Image (cartoon, rainbow, N blue to C red; front, side, top):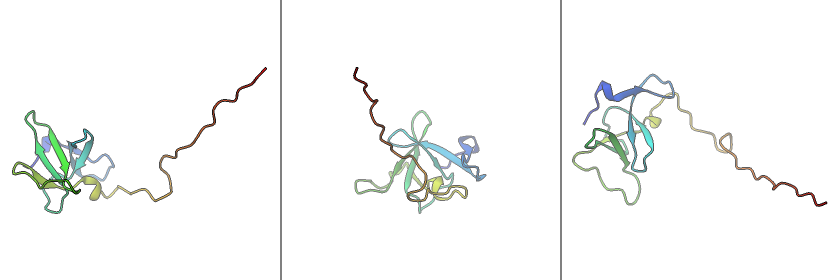
Length: 105
């Protein structure tokens, strides 16, 4: 199944490409390239109410695509403005805060 222009939005990273927003098995949004691709690792389908859904084809327990699913690539794999974070630089750091100091009088 190929999405229509009505289903597509511009890339949030600003690369100028159109993306299809799907909902993963875990309920998270994922931007997908709008054309089917045999090299993709996402099985994409449209559910009864018309929402686009996706599930990963990677992993030991992943099943192959069902007849009603098409294979697509995640947009993060092809986006020209996406830069993966460098290891050890940036990102969120977990800091440990000391408990407030008690003053005994």
